[in-house]
Image (cartoon, rainbow, N blue to C red; front, side, top):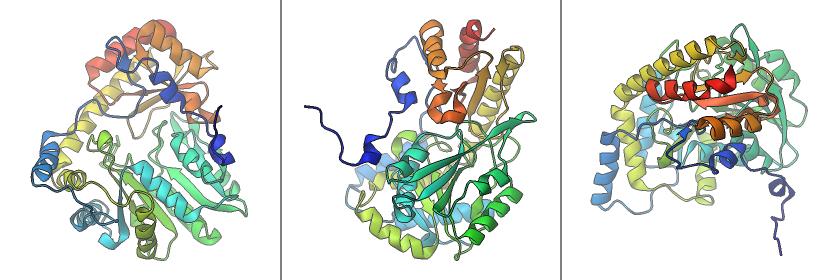
Length: 385
């Protein structure tokens, strides 16, 4: 007997095409794995040591729902130093991953039958987290223009209907590297205020930017009266993907609600992980700068290689560490990714994984040393010429 979940919204979920492809070859030594979005370097030693010390001290007990107060204070200080905000620890809920932060945000504001508007292509977990709750998804296409990806704000606003409860915006964007500018963020926030719509901003890639030190954020534009939730994570900037540590920034009144919601989701986060987060915030700037320099070098190598291939269209990313590119004549991105894996030994993410607007594209994560990226590009060249 085959058993299924009772809820139609869960039954309708499709498996991740990225995972589906990666699971066929994950761990193989003859494959260059560029399908997942994570740095190739382990978490810095000083961060790992902080967690080890906490373990040795016996810090293995339950913790507050919203996170250790020292971590919440450190996050408030980090954002004040970066954006000049006046947020306090009362605006912050620490979460076990950015993905959990997103799920909690949606649980608080989205009901079955609500619509959520999302610019796309986008990481598949974002719309799926809303679909699980029974929400309708309206995708607004990002389009390449003048060498970069762009969002038409008029099109975004027109997609909001009477049942729209939230705009869910991932900027900097996975997979395209598209990034909102400050003026655009102000227009979006004004629209949300006018229409009484929640703004959920996924800013996980805010420190991986190529023309400035950090991405524009909604965090320095919102007030306590705004309906906003801002998602962030330790995963990308501090190379802590496996630690599963993130945070939500929200109005204080909603954080009090989040405290209740966290209890019925995961209760609390392991103390050594949170202590590692404090250490990352206090001593991680040098690592972030060095990582950004590595990614810039890798991006230059990708741009140089693709620039010599007439069949390849590559709108250059403004942020994040992905090359989202199209190959002339390719209409089935999963099939192409399978061929790249089988014939070239390179693991890519198929663009179809990121929604209908991603079909025909491939995503290559270049958060790795230049030599590895150059080798992967050389191995792929027979499929691209």
